[in-house]
Image (cartoon, rainbow, N blue to C red; front, top):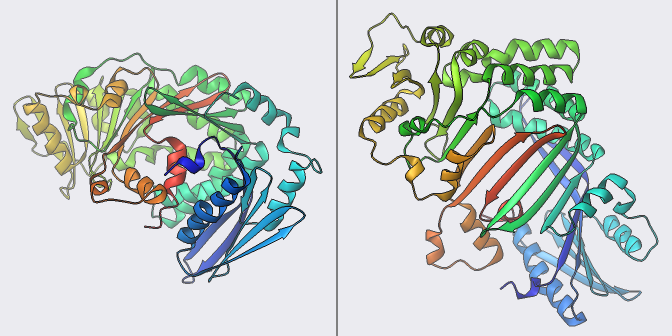
Length: 469
């Protein structure tokens, strides 16, 4: 029932982060990052409707998030109704009603400051000229978000740790990523602007990262679309692929070099040399030992795909320019002197442990775990329907797109999570349809632009995080 939300305008500000650490062993611990936030809703509603919103929707939301016994208290002070919810573990949530506005936060001081600002007793965010200018240009959008340079500095450490954990299990690598990446962000990024709009039955999100002019100029001139239209490259990918990324680069090697150059210049010389030393390992997951030399021997189109939801079956496909050069860039675990599997026009080499394979098929090089490469070969032989002919409209836009990087992905769970957060699941909701997302990345003279087209948008992703399951 969304009737209580009709006509409401909402603003949410993250004020700060609280960091806590729980030690598990001498070497391992759990880091918790908790944002201090305040949300303000202008309801344009009658007083009884405003009270109903707090006492029903918001209170129900708090009980669901705290998932335990919650004590509630209501007080009246100077015409303002105040609410406090206390969880068994000590967490608290606060709300206040002032006229037609509702204030909600996990920090009581933040609510008091916001009420003071609303009453004209304090400065609002509009005193930030950069934010005010960005907002004025995008007033008609469905949603608007802004991260200042100061804000980027605060979230950089959190982002660095998050990426490090996701990218590798090696402790030394995690340590390097979590230390270097925040420095890169603080050095290069000047502000982040997010907008969302409804378009053609989807939500279109745009995230623009304004970077230093020197970095933007280098990346904008070197990471350019190649204009490739190699349709046959999709004939190795199953139509039910979980996610697929197409890189269309005018010069893959130059693009790689320029990215490394910009990143290395944003940190101190020692860290810059460390980045250069580890750069060739960037393509290790695909069995590529010399990344830069590999990129010099391929065409403009690169495909990477995740076949399964867990990410255990991955594959990379490239258009071959120089086969001999590519052979020399692959992992030493693949011995090209050993017998190969020859099946018609295809040639396949296997690693010594049998887990990894590379294959030359119809002018393309396929890299990945042996099962996936064998599957690609089979699909290539039997292909009658390419992914471009599939029922996924957004996939067709990936094939026809003109961005240097485009990703099509499927989310099997977000629809179910949205239903559980905003409504009451029924038996039918157990068969909720898959949500698809198309993501495009472009490099401009001012920074980096990411465009997302999906069913629920970033707003939906944020809402789904509150699913107690």
